Image 1: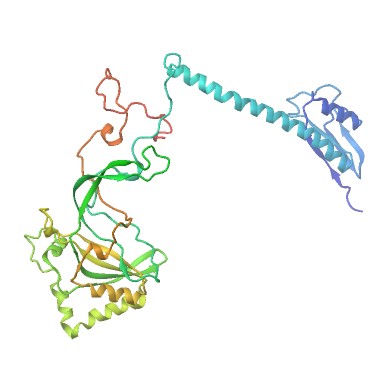
Image 2: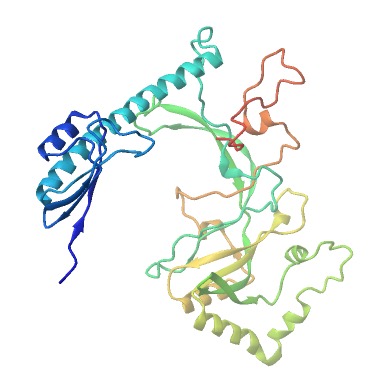
Length: 377
């Protein structure tokens, strides 16, 4: 004989709810019955306290159990549970409505809203976070962090070039910006003039794709390099022996350049990204610097062998800016701003100056946030 199936159905019920009392009368039991044990729907025992409210410390919270059929139990439990949940939701909504009002009253008292009715308690942040950390740049030459996406269907072409800022001027043009006040009107704008002397191609770098990103496989240099690019490989050109690339240049004469040809074939076979090494001709600018700037320029379009042949054909030849960009083409300009020296927080971040009678300076930061969390919101 199998053991009797004992089921206990419990619902949290407040003793003073009218729904609970009506439910208990319907179940033919006291409103404060705590436990019912049933076997096949027939009550076999019950534990009661009295018809009065049980002490809360003895039975927190009061439980009511029923021994009716499953449908009756579900309906009764659902009725009691819905009423309890609705009461809890009402209390939460009331607290949510009162919290902002209390916060506004507290803020108004703290900031003296009675005297400063125009005072705003929020403001947009000062300074862009895109240029952090605000310190001296590690390199003066701009760094291309993302070259254009390669499309093998297009012809082989270069994707970048270098230049030097020559100065600024103004230009008058018609503004084409729907919604602006000056739409279809003439405006005067400041423009920058960039001087772009022809670059000289001096090498090829081949990259292979790995699970951790691109990795350079090999580099092939040109046979003859000028002194202005050799200066880039020395800290002090005057004290150096100036022997850079003397041994590498001999590889072109040994075995008819077999080692150079072998490295080019490796790039064609294994690499997926090909970049051209080119340097500027800084001697053609009015700058006093003699050390040229060297950078990698990605070659896009066509297959990998076509890219290698294209880059190798540019060795020791000038690269005009017209061969890289077209007229009226939209391009990205990457540069490093000039230094402003050691400046204060008002100059660097544009924070608001303090009132005239502030002690120990006006161009300082006062309260810009809470103590905790300690970071600027």
